[in-house]
Amino acid sequence: MLLFPVVFALNLHWAGSHLYELELLWLIAIAVPLGIVGGDFISGLVHWAADTYGSEDMRVIGPSLVKPFRLHHVYPRDICTHGLVETTGNVCILAVPALAGCLYLMWLMPESLWLSFAVISFALMTAATVATNQFHKWAHQESPSGFARWLQRHHLVLGVAHHKLHHTQPFDMNYCITNGWLNPLLNKLKFFRRLEATLGLFGIETVRAKDAREAAQLKTN
Ligand SMILES: [Zn+2]
Ligand SMILES: [Zn+2]
Image 1 (cartoon, rainbow, N blue to C red):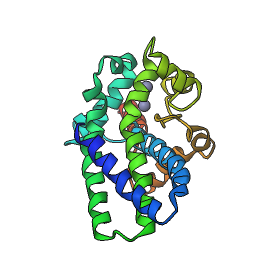
Image 2 (cartoon, rainbow, N blue to C red):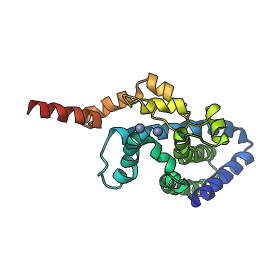
Image 3 (tube, protein in one colour):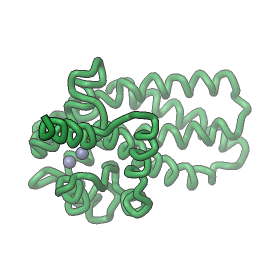
Image 4 (cartoon, helix red, strand yellow):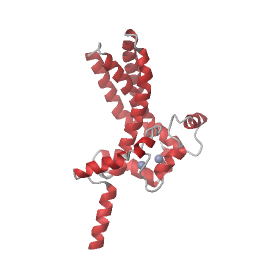
């Protein structure tokens, strides 16, 4: 968590200085929405995967990823008791090496315009992803700070009513939890249902399908 702001700022500084030298700093206006929407998409994909596949006793990802999301459905308010380290620490463990990798790439290819643009977009996406659990926590708090409420009102972070739909039967929509901007589109496209159907073709079964199959087997026995 302490390293994240350092590598994040270094990435922005190096990549930003390069775009400035090329007089293409305006590209940041494209990188910002791209990074935020990318972060929202990652949050949805990871959340959906943890809600839909695997079990809590899988190695490494079981206790660190699957369990928190499953528990969150049983005790939604539990997230409000998490401190900043518990809320953002797990994501920082992945974000810091990824951003360190970006610094290495920029060191290898300091002249690449597209790398600088990609790095700024990626750095913003990781920042959005790191902040996601905090935004998610605000959506469950009874009385979040005035600043958090302002961000919610302006749809810059996950909205309370919007996220409530995810916690409502049949618990299969609005997976994106950074600001939820992508949810209407992904819901309309039935994106996650189609992804589940595609993975099903490869024999990868959702928890819902597995439970239904086991219940049917019990009945016939
Ligand atoms: Zn969920
Ligand atoms: Zn929630």
